[in-house]
Length: 458
Image (cartoon, rainbow, N blue to C red; front, side, top):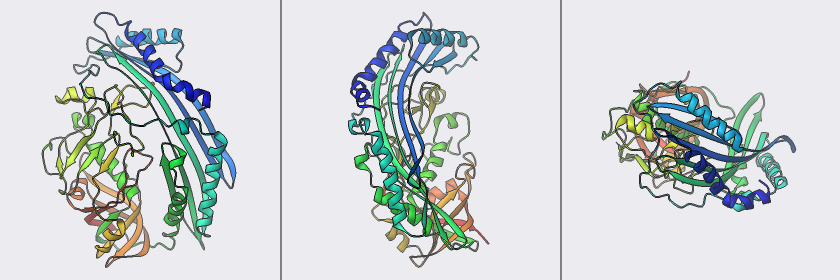
């Protein structure tokens, strides 16, 4: 975003709200109308061998309009904020109502009295950060990575940022607007040792580049690749696994899919009848908290304009709630948890967790490993979504990592699977680490120890 654009951004979301208000004011008798307006900016830089291989700097804006009448929903959108186009979108949404299927739960979100948590989600430093310096950061990360280990090659080094202004207004009385931005650096690596090649990655995130730690990203990328050199296929047995923070974050996203109110309403969750049950070790407290400013996906509003909020999903291992938007809440006789998500003005709201985190323990990964007699540190997991059934809970994914023998990390291993069920794994949690890693995704990472997992190898 240019400096001039950044200056105008201070009032940009208010201007978007004015557009949304004008649409809602045109609602006819018997209509419920929602206008979602947004403006986005993004930069994406990829560097290879010191040269820019890919560069994108883009801006987009648009509006999505929902019209609901007699239980039927019509939706339309346009990638422009031209008044004539907006009038056409409203007319098209009204026309689409006629093709909608009657749905007794159709409706818009209504104000619920939950106050917006004030957060510092916008960085002027990022908004005015020079493009040339963004490219330099990607080049510097590549050089730091190459210097970390002679066996390492940088496959690609990336800088990425994004910013959004949004506003939503409805005939039910919602009028909200906001803006946020963020950025990250990442690097992918290849490590060579004779005829063998292993891959790795590293990253660092922030509200502005001043929060980056490129040295750590480079070290992580080199270490993840080199530590697996010489890996062999292990024998099959039952072991204790220690999930690396990045693997835990992906595991939590799988768990989140089972706590989604839409999935529960459709009978596609293994926890659909388990509210109030002990479903995990009492050590496990899982929260979805987009009001935590440390989370890369922190936000103050959900996709329907309700205040984002902290939701405890598992407390002391007990299943306390599912996440809902207003639609899934109506279907299940619950209340929205402020978890409406949408990919922008082109779609209607879905349901999803926003910023998952396990309540951390008191010890770091090294201390957790020291207590494992026979186990594996899982550094990589493949197929975490395709290899898990959210209805039955069956869990079987490919993995790579390091053996643990009498509390000491040992030889690298790969080409094996770890298998159990989600139900069993949650109950078999032994300890949660304190090494919280804030990632450019919807879950924070932390080391996690799980007992009695089947490792299938040679």
